[in-house]
Length: 178
Image (cartoon, rainbow, N blue to C red; front, top):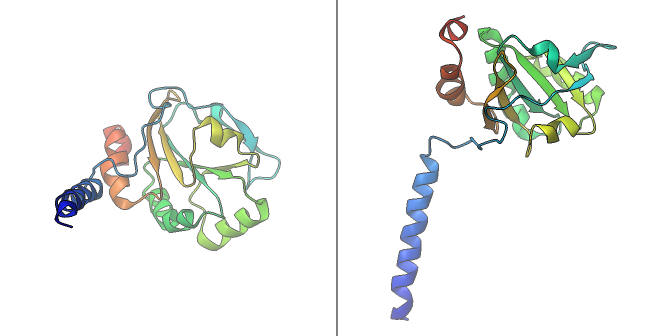
């Protein structure tokens, strides 16, 4: 029995050290994306909110924007929604939504009930655009610069801390001050 005490104690110590490291990691919520530093994938998808209109990635070039992948079936998307409304109200950077593998009526109802933080919402019924962005699961948010280059990817519900410490510092000073 004594021969198990030392290995068990070392395992417990290792688990505690790893747990503390993960909890305090500044990169929590960040998954390095192969898109970082590369052009954002091109898309042309139907608009959720403007019938007959198409949301095109080419129309987004020339300005910074946040590209947020969400769905009504996603519990964490509901958790982040109030933060997205705050981001919109701050007016620092426009939000473009990608409604991923969702029912249009459910998504429109969701936005009517909770508020619409998005400047435009593209509908990705088949999930092809999300795949092109390398999305693992909703919600995921990408910061794209005026040249159409992905500069940052955040995985999980956007928090105030992530907004203030990880996204805002990446925006140009005059853009972040608006």
